[in-house]
Length: 122
Image (cartoon, rainbow, N blue to C red; front, side, top):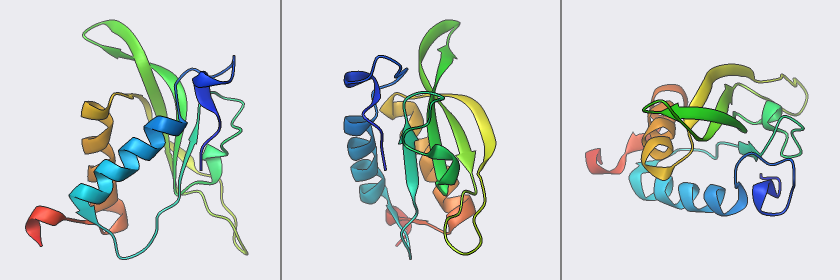
């Protein structure tokens, strides 16, 4: 799930739609999951992408790399919908949103918290 992000929204702090698609594809190439995991992307705190109800929620936020401001995401975990809804809780405040940082970060979360297995280990 993704809002329109910075590409089409003046409030967006990060580009979401193309990034969400690209990162999902890279994760599918690197890991196997026994079930779907809902990842919600939202470009800003207005949360049109409803990051708080994603099993993994990613909200646009500033991050720093080598002391310089870069596009980043706030990571939330544990959102649920349905008969026992829960809001996600903040897991990490500022992760750089570039693919080189975010893909391995999400891969680690999916392995440790959601039982994913690296494809190289299969």
